[in-house]
Length: 401
Picture: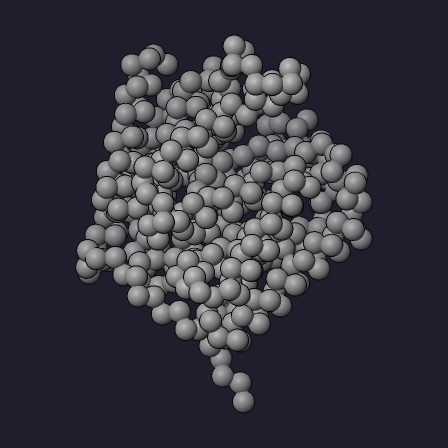
């Protein structure tokens, strides 16, 4: 990739992000996160020499732009006013019935954590295992792992409600507890995924409620991107030299920004499956025990059996899935629908607190569009984050005699 190409591609995404921020008056949104990750994944695979087919990166750029335009068009159709609605109906969420239900769910999650890591699994062995080893230790306990995502959802709904009624100390204490629990869990499992989930959802809500300006949010995002692409150099420098040695600075493209490209290239050679994986994803949203093999698992078993044998894996991507299902025609079809979905969530987030909660849960997982198939992207999010909170809302609405 030439210097001119990289500058042009980077400039296109920056222009789109700037337009989105100025148009929505919000620094961080589903749209801006889509554009930010689109820039990282497109430029990452173009920059890295391990990417086989550079043209696939341009297909990703096109898919991101299709999604963004579709989302904005959907918003323009659905919105009946240009003013942001802030008078959410919150009374239900501050009833004793709702609060007690949230407490019961939180206690259940904590009990499940201790049961899994102190009864079923040796936590010391887990901590000192490799990433693949941890996956093998946890295999078979998938349903018991709901606690980590459900606690994150409790943190997010508590954050959303607290920011709109800051005199309520119940949600303040609850979000502090869930936030600290997530931090401890991230340290124990040596995984930054759930820490990033809490951090991004918090940044989103602070941006949405105008407690952080666009300038400061952008500054935090720039620092975050820098840390993401230089953390291996920083850790190596600290471990082997005892300090950060800027003379040895090395910019390393994370492998996840490259592997999706090669996976998509392989999907171009596969027979079209005519929407079968999307149907599997929909069935999994309707029935949690629907038995199917995720495309990411199928891929690593077929193309990288050695990685599969040690419990490892590869990401997939919605782009690769669209091509596998419908060929190149799948790109406009799938990403047009994705844009409509994002546009609907964006619109109703301005009217209903429930949809704002959904939006806040989606912000941290937007990157999975570029590294997961639809099944892996939606199943855990739906059953462990959205369904539990939705059930509590429905229970709280019921009037028992």
